[in-house]
Amino acid sequence: MNKNIFKIFGIIALSLSVTVVTAQVIGGSSQSAVNTPRDNVFDEIHVEFKKPVPYPPLRQADVMYKKRVWQKIDFREKMNQPFYYPIVNHVGWKSFMATLIDALKAGELTAYDDRIDDEFTTPLTWADMENRLKGQADSIDQYDQRGVFLGKKITYPDEYQPGEVKSVKLKEIWYFDKQRSQMMVRILGLGPVREFVDTQTKQKREETLFWIYFPDARPVLAKSVVFNNKNGGARLTYDDVFWKRLFDSYVYKEENVYDREISQYAMGMDALLESNRIKNEIFEMEQSLWEY
Image 1 (spheres, helix red, strand yellow):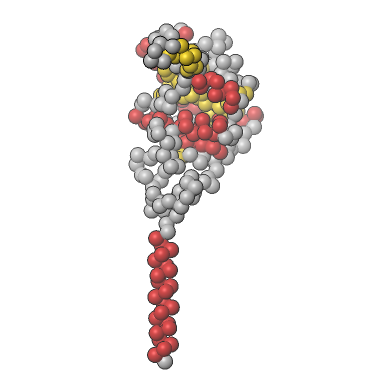
Image 2 (image 1 turned 90 degrees about the horizontal axis):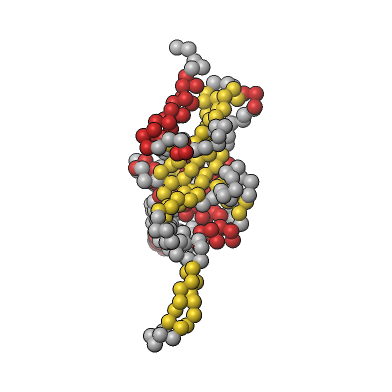
C-alpha cells in the first residue's frame, strides 16, 4: 500500500516538473531561425491570419454622386507619426514605407510608374525599383597614399535612405450610395513621397517614388501592425488605419477640366482655404440630401 502511495506521489511530482519545464519554454519569434525567448506575455497570432474587411457591394446605378480627389498624409503631424516610425525595424513592427518595400521585394505587391501617370498603367519590376531608389550614379577618383591613381569608384549620392519618405499621396473616390443613403470613400492608390537634398543643385526635392494599387495592397497592410498610443494590447494594422480614417490629410488636387493641382493656381493660405473648400463641398453634398 505504501509503495503504491509513493508511486502516485512520484508520478505527480514528475508531471509537475514536466509542466514547469514546458512553461519555461515560452517560444521564440516567428522571424527567428532559432528558438529565442518571446518578448511578450502571449503569442500575437491574430495578425498573422487577419484579412481586410471586404468592400460592400456597389452598383453603378446606386452611385448618384461621385468625386475624385487626391490627398496627402504628412507623417510629421502628430496623428500621422505611426506611419513614420520605427525608422529601424523591430520584430513584427515596421514603418509604413518599410512594409511597402519588403512587400515589393518579395513580389507581394506591384509598383506602378508615377512618371507616366497615376492610373496604374505601367508596372515596374523590382529591378526598376532598385535603380530608382539608388538614384543617378557618380564616379569618384581613388588614389593611394603615394598619389597613384587606383581607379574610379561608383557611388550613388542620392540613394534612398530610410526615413526620407515623410508623406504619402492618396488617390480616392468619394461617392454617395443611395442604396445605403451614405457618403462613402474608397482609396484607389498610394504614392510615397520622398524628400531629400539633391547633391548637384543642393536644393530640397520632393519626388513620388511609385504608385501602389490600394485594393491589391490591403492583404499586406492587414498583417502589418501599427503602434497604438492608447492601448498596446489592441494593436491596429495599416489597413485598419485607412479603413477607419485614423489619419489627418489635406486635399492637394480635385478632378478638374485643366487636370491641375491646387498649387498651380493658389499658394500659401489660399491653397489651404481651397483644400478646405473641396472637403466642405463633399460634406455639404451629403447634408443637402437630407431634411431635418
